[in-house]
Image (cartoon, each protein chain N blue to C red):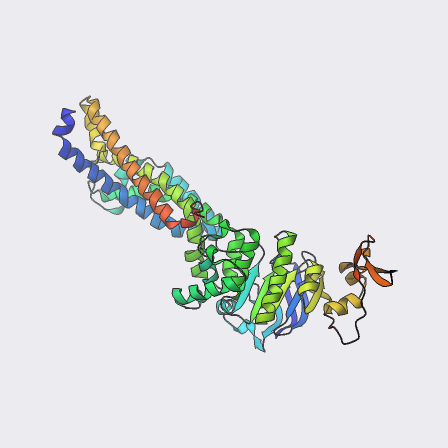
Length: 213
Length: 279
């Protein structure tokens, strides 16, 4: 306990860093998955390619990817951007299949009817298919969010600071309290993001709520 | 007037849904296209608003060849009502009805005002306006579907088995309601069904189809009933079934009409010729 109070400032800084590293991959993952997932849903030729590549991508272990990225794209080895890019790739890999299936799930009847009443092709995607795909996308995004928050910790092994620093240092010093604080903080961030996603999802899909009557 | 001139529709898999169809659909009347499933009736309907494009032949609306028109713009000026309503599940009743006016560029306020009027037209309680389609009964959903079809005040209303999925009581109610609306609004309605009773009740003109979109017979219900063109039509309309044959018996000096079971169906009354219009 004393240790926590003594290091409160440092813990708070690491928590903020952790949060700041988690958020962009989740948001970017969503932003990239939506159009790619729609492509995979819409065109047979793209479906196999996109889903296979994204499946393979997720099998690359995170640590080597963090190390290789700077070599591939020419960023500095300690730059947090490496972690953000790597985790965005994972987010897309995880989310792409879900988004594809979410678009697949929109009923043919609703598609026919939106065509019949005169939505243009673009309007059909943005005003009909996308909103109706949202509930499934939100479910997928919750998985991505939890996975991203836990993967951010790995970044501390290549010197990008986050709550993961508490794990490494706790292990080195054989000091369980530090590790527990790191785990607690990670769970807290994951919980907070999950709550935000659930609330945001609910706000975007008012028709899914039970009847007021 | 909607004119089909030697219209053929073949699909890429080689099947021909409609072959060399020629048909005239008069303005401000109800034309019912009736046939068994797979006879091409829905394809015919969908060619009118270019959800399906004809392979050959021309379709004209008031002498305008529709293949020269922008399909999206064309659909926005033709009402469409489908089976199971086809409402957008993520929009309220009011916004569903307002869909086409909004697409046509009306402001939200104007479109919603128009939608509210239409709820009255189709006999829906205003209290339902802010519900979502899943919170309505099947019959209510179909009414919303009809309101949406009428929202942009189209001249033409296409109806694809709109009452096929509701129970018989509600269906009768909806059919009567549609007749009432049609008396007030006089749209050019093209109605597709597999139910010959429905066709005879609603149609000013009835077009009976056989496989491949070939017209077996077309005319007023009375024409078809009194002079079926061939055995196919006769069997389709059930003219050869006992169901349509009524018997009379004189009881207490009055002529009682009996149905196929011998149940009294009503009293026979002579109508002087010209006294009542045959439909």
